[in-house]
Image 1 (tube, one colour):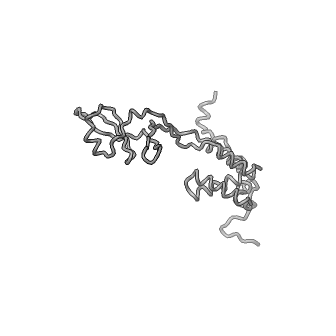
Image 2: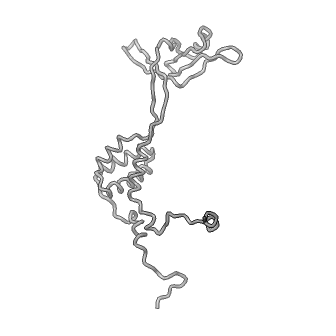
Image 3: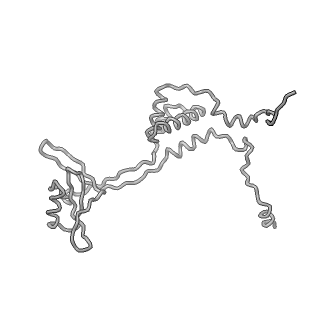
Length: 212
């Protein structure tokens, strides 16, 4: 006679529940080391974290292999997708609008009254742009501005020119997240297999109120 004590008698685990946990018990997938390194490196560059990149790569690799997807072609496709990064837009402006003749901030302070409000200055050594702006009292002040950029062009050892740009930034659409979400959902088990219902229970009082 079997004595169970305070524990309930053992029962067979439902096959559907076993299917749900298959991902945890399946043996590891053997892949070429170069492929594994490429996928891990790609996701580490996206997440910016070694551990999370490796975890995401393992999940994606398992799902892609289960779906019969060629891994190398898959990696190449991932690299073509937009990743929601910040895109820099540079609009050229005429160099005549920028005064870069001064080398120090102290020189700018001493000579700023020789210029009109709105004048732009660039200090190459500091790589900082300043704009002459009016103060409340009617005086002028130099304010550092960040939406400008200078590209240095060396013509020879004695001649350096600068190309100036107004800079703005936009964020691109994140195609990679949408693609990975769709892919990883391919291995999800339907909730009905777990005995869950997608039909919400209706409160009897609400049901009575909506009866014709």
